Figure 1 (cartoon, chains in turn purple, red):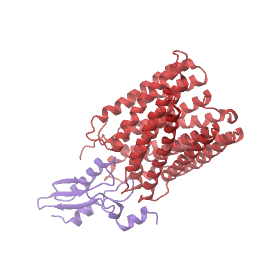
Figure 2 (cartoon, helix red, strand yellow):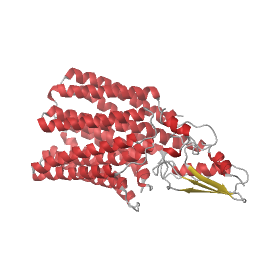
Figure 3 (tube, rainbow over the protein chains, first blue to last red):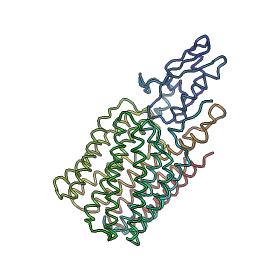
Figure 4 (cartoon, each protein chain N blue to C red):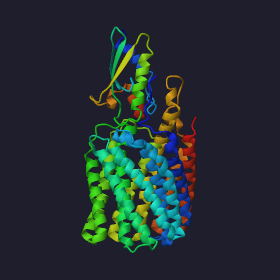
Length: 100
Length: 411
């Protein structure tokens, strides 16, 4: 129904308020798919297991996908393997965070 | 719309009194320094003991307890047993602290009452933490630090109350031995171990550090725990070798911990020098200075060196570590309460937008200069420098109070 790129684009509206970048450019969204019936599945991680916003971020991801026309359900799978690190972020994020 | 769990962020009205009172006690502690005489300062001077309780109970403990209301679920990965109990902790700690400080300054008869009220506040806190820990299925090293530190706090406050009773003349006990045990259990056992455990969660979280080993934390925490036990035992069995071994172990533990923080600092992805980063840099440099002064004291037995080490540890290390984290914790809590429901509906601020740039910078610079001048004043036993340093500290503390209120009222 929607491609991975289209789903990523929807999720890119979700911004981490601490870092100031969206979850996709941070490299936190590992995968996203959607079947013909409008059931979406997102695989993602967080920068730390201790993130106090983690329940809220999962909720925002769900809501961002649910806003897409025809989406009936969203399942978010939070995984810790592979563990996130800064090399997974987009080049401009790495550059900005490093202060270069 | 999905329901939002409050497990990981208790209501801000519950936590805000801790931070407001903590910042005011930081200000009162800064004013208090004007009344010190640098020439004849001593650890047994009731003015010094009163100051230590004002700063440690009023600012350090008050702020740590408030922060723990939010950080315990983050660190333990479970919700609180009864977060509402924190509504009772701050008034008790406030009353107990004031009674104890006035007790030391004016009327020792107030000490048992103040000590009892502080004891009740801390028992409520410790029991809440222990009951929350029952929900944890598997302890990691950071969770263990919470368990260890709160066990030390439990014994530390009992020793403190017995000492208060002895000080007021209610019972007959060796105050010197009780004092040594009380100081090591609370400062080394509770504050230092709590800082060790929480900092290795918070600093990598804010700095986006990854791929570092937790081994140095295990070593430093184990050494500090053993050091506290040895010093407490030596306070009562009077065995110099055990006591000195305990002191040496505590210093080595802190050096290993500093190495761990250095590794976390080197592996961070986020290299901006905001108020949080510079506060932590000053804080950890203060830790090193304090340890060097402590070593110099053991070699020379010159008391101003020990007073200077304690000063740099309290106002330099603890003070800046706590104020630095306040600039992260308060914006998060306020943002969570006021702005998170608006995400996706309207533009919301980033957390960094909620930190007042000018007053936070003023707080850092005036306080850092004040701490440094007072360090020199203690070493040179100079009253003039002491007053000059206190002047800087008070301006820094006023800027800190202003920053706290700005963040709390951010709309």
